[in-house]
Amino acid sequence: MNLEKVKESLNKYQATLHLDSYSRRENLISEMSKLEAQGTDCSKCSGFCCTYYHNSMQVTPLEAIEILIELMESDRLNDETIERLKANSKKYRLDNEITDGHGRILRRYYTCPFFNDHSLGCSLSRRAKPYGCLAFNAIEKNVSVEGKCKSQSGLLEQREKEFSEVESNLNNELQSSLKLYWIKKPITQALLDMMMQMSI
Ligand code: SF4
Ligand code: SF4
Image (tube, rainbow, N blue to C red; front, side):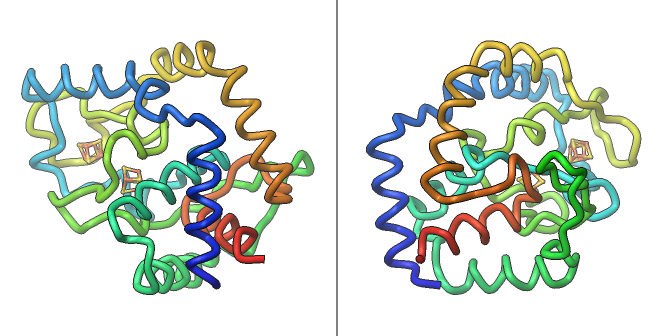
């Protein structure tokens, strides 16, 4: 994989697509901050939701490119990260895709490559996290066991409704220019696939 070409492409997309990753996540981030201010946070949890016991997160091309841009801007788009993604893909056999006949990849369980063990949690900033990750929060204080968290689906729907047109256009543009045949993929595979296409 040619990382210089990948970075060149990311810079081009960043300049032309007018991505506003924070605004499109703002309602989810505000709710998360509100819960944290009340003491309903993840600080006592080992991070079940990011591990293969529970995590089957899939992302769109738009969410994937926002993660790649964050990695590039924080100097983490390097050989080490690529190797980590490849090892993650191999470990959970994420490259072995099964589709539902409509271009959707069936959900697979895997420990997220951006999960730092235990309370260190997610290594992505909130402006680059997948929407589904931001919406999944503890519902009690001091959660340390499973089953005490939920996805705030109302907020996810509200966000999706507000930005569906702009996001659909951006996803279409990425799918078409990078020749992506998928709508959503596991985070690991979405990133590897996009970078592969950018290297050509
Ligand atoms: S959302 Fe729930 S399972 Fe996930 S890290 Fe927070 S407390 Fe733990
Ligand atoms: S992106 Fe972050 S919050 Fe989402 S599954 Fe990965 S480590 Fe967990």
